[in-house]
Image (cartoon, rainbow, N blue to C red; front, top):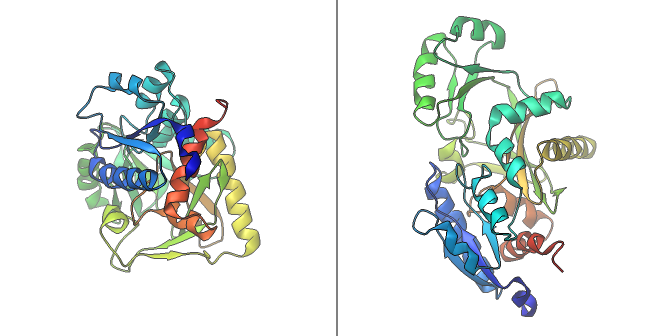
Length: 308
């Protein structure tokens, strides 16, 4: 790619200190290799090993840091301060998107459908939560991604153990109503939705958990997703509204469910989704003709907007 010089020197930010470090290392290496193959002057930059002040030596940044520190507005704030263009969502949208409760509150305030939930604290009356949400529920750390620390709870007596597991990852924990139905993911590139993917984990997996995301090879990815054309368009439009509502930009992903009555429910937004061999954004982009390398360059090109 002859015009790759327009990007200058690019820091590919990956690794970091979050619970998702291992996934970020895989994603970041894949992105780095793709950019190098495309002729971009790209270098690995792991903020765990180097001071972020060294970023002044670069022209732009491709963020592939998953989880805290990289997906929550922190690194975005550093890059803003250094006046360095970067990929993806800005400070505010990143901070909101990393907080599952804040995301839900914004969606609820925007009349967008999201599964009912309750924040769980030590003082919470769990019987009241069960009465309100029913069983099963899913217990989630509020500020983690990649399904880290999540559990499906089907019996009241399993509630405490699930909360204990989640609190190992986050001081703030939520219970969310379990939606029985089909799970979909909607990826975005240049702020526009890509084809919807249906996720079908194997029968022995309760939900699309960390193992299903990164370690199994028997998850089915449906493209086309099995929805009617009208339903798929409706889901894409709903997710685009949800993506914009939290202030997400450029590229990212929203996970959603369709219940047995056919209603769609928004689950969460990912502002720095995975870019590994198992990841969903590359699969969706491939469906509209992007190779992995082309996808990485297209995401990086978002950093040129307003600088030409």
